[in-house]
Image (cartoon, rainbow, N blue to C red):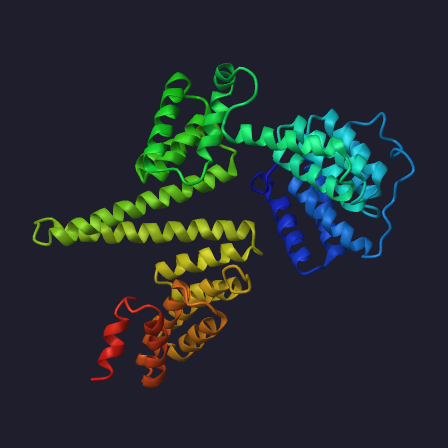
Length: 455
């Protein structure tokens, strides 16, 4: 029932992105106007509803009084539950997002619709508005326990005890929830363990799939389990996707791609799966290109070597053009997504289209999460076009913004050194190299360059 961001139709994805941007800019009322139609038309988009409520809460003002409401929302009894929820969003939550009665009604409607995530959100909203309402907190904790989220329940019970340390029910609830969470984390449940493992084998395997820090041997054993399950039922998309993921982790890219592509035939509308398949297809092409280049390097005297060089150049050209086409399509769907702008700029750069890459990277650097990467590639574009003064400025700006000497800063400083050398700025060239030298003697050829300057 839950709809994810990647499953939204393009028009709603556009509104969603704009709404997020408005929230980041603290333009709360505009964010509400953008997100409300998304939530009303796509009621299963729980993440959007949470962001909408955040914007509504801020719009209501820091000195708002949380209302207990005046009974159930009128007109809801004979309507479809989703229609009533839409009415609540339109007529109540916009003005009073923490209204207790309205959120209680939302909770009841969500239970009727068998949408536990939405039901929990309704109770969470009441708790946010009434942080000492232990009665509702007990209901929320019990809801989490009922729907197999003991970790969350344990936290709520702990919060209750902070308010009322004498609440014996909360004390017992916290212990029970913690024990339940520990049992579930081991992949088995209460009752007859063998029966439970048999009944929940698929769920347990999927839980193991998401476990962090697996060794290669554990990954191979897990893959063997899924192969057995797949041989019994080769139409189970969970098994197919799991095998694709495990082959990917084992760096068996061709096998991974085969199963990702098969998974797409089972669920062609899965946008996230489509994107993952594109990524693995690109990776498989990269592996093939690397293998082909290695063959050419090792067999330079082969009679067909020139033919293979031409073939490799053509593959690389097609690879670059394909990456550009895919990136442009994604940008057209989400023109405000700066990360997609960066991907397009990167695709242009690798294709040698530096002029086309520059405006995309200039837009991308406004995203703080990819700003340094965008500036670094922008500087490289300038350098490729022999606009060395602009490249020097870009690398200098990036270096100043990086406080920690990590691999990214070393890379930026190294580029700064090289462009300084090209411009005849010997002092700046050595200054950048010495900064790296003082932190990492073995980085590239920095030691050789620095030490040779003293001879």
